[in-house]
Length: 407
Image (cartoon, rainbow, N blue to C red; front, top):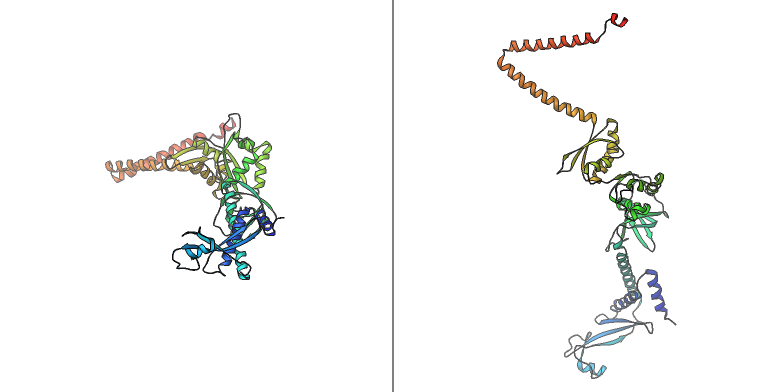
């Protein structure tokens, strides 16, 4: 029949998910720590006897020629009396010490040491298991709230969803099941080691991989994703096969695939655009849903583009508080300057006006060099009268007489 202490060790090991040897090591360390309060100057060693299920405590003394510390050393002659002629210098001899008289404080110390060792073993196991799973989507249950952070249960362990990693469009209650992406794993954190996120673009990418078979099997590739969690997201997709439409594959029949992702993200709008090697075409697609009239590269080195849209499309292209063009710039990596056709026309007219003004000033300077002020003034007045007469004549020619109307 198994010893009761060994049964307890096995039960704790299964409950905490650690090896039995770790628990036994923790018990041995705990007994040594507790015994130091009773046997202060001795070198102690605890050993768990798996046959009897008992913990044995020993004081260890080293054999020396000349004893300077009786608590930790023993002479060769005395050692030979204890163990026989095989005793040699630098050998260690163990002397049994009772554990029954360690006392209540020592037992409490042992308990604390065991808890600490088991907790450290748990944390090492969690780190080893989840450090290679960063970027993976996991499902957990909301357990409690701590200063705006959400503590979630992932099976037998806890994870933290910090406030800054929560979408502002989402609200949760205790018991809600939530899917989130693993953002990182901390080895030295006091609280939950696993940090989750609901705002990371990796969550959006993983959701598309789960919902779209073409992305999962590699036919369609996600070349980039950007988000402003709770409001809008943009995803650039590319197809390796000419016959497969990447945008259509992600949208699904009647939008079923993308709608399931939108529901998971609590109504976040998702723009799916086609990726292209041509930066002009890529930026044109990224400005979606606005329609672009023309795109021109202003500075290739600094990656600056000018995008012209219809007057009615300007607000749609910019988006609410600049959100659409901001996400498009993040997705493409280009700085985008959006202008309406009217703005561009006024800008061009102003440039031509500046040129004409510059030309007129040059002509006036030439005239002033050859004519007197009176002659220049008269010439200008004559030109103005001639222009007025010509305009009036054109107006009269354009206006039919009553007789002509009658005929």
